[in-house]
Image (cartoon, rainbow, N blue to C red; front, side, top):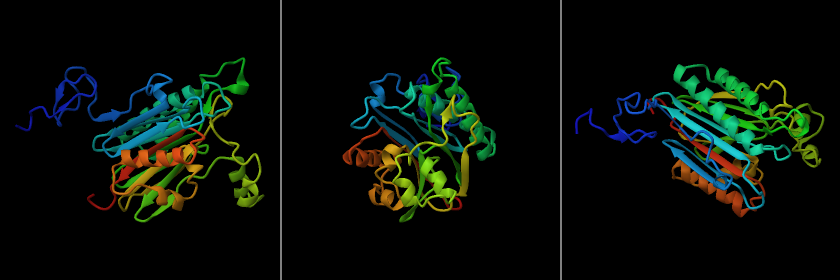
Length: 302
């Protein structure tokens, strides 16, 4: 086989392509960018259990055991030679068409983040742009005559290159970093309880006993107004995993050490995501569960 002989197929039209090709000659698809399907699985039934995987990144979304439909969504993609972008959104159950809100949010945001990766843009700037674009699209789903049930969702994203990672969020979907034998939570919930604890009004124990503890203080949607994400950027210095999830998982594994104890070891990201979703299902599966996992290479020359 010569270096120019076909080794792969275009994911759009299955025409033969080579690793050197930037675009498919048959259909014009950009071969440097691979991402999950726009619109997600397409039907309500197909949303009950969704699994996607690309090299180094994978996700699983499950309806759970008690909800009538899956209102979570995920989207991710990678730019060859640049990095990976991932978005997880959790539709707010009290809003209408929450599954549409989360799906349009992840699709819009991941496209902005992938464009930023291709252009070499600052990841925190891209994250803010992605949130603004997603918020506008979700707001556009609202019915003027029913603002009290405007479609809405939470948001968490990650942009990962070989040596850095940026996590952004709005709401209470979370991101955890797992490296070595330990883990750290990277996000701070935008909730009534977290806000009062941060302000020193209540202790965490006091806040969590209140029935308003998990009420969102920030979200995406027509009734959210302009939204700026919180963001954190860190160097990827050692191999590990970045786990993004909806509260359907972290309600059962709230602390980093809980996540570490449940984490499947020595398996690809897809198996890690499946294993964590299974933990939530076995614990009761009272909510939709979405887990996206990114493999972090880390270290010089990794």
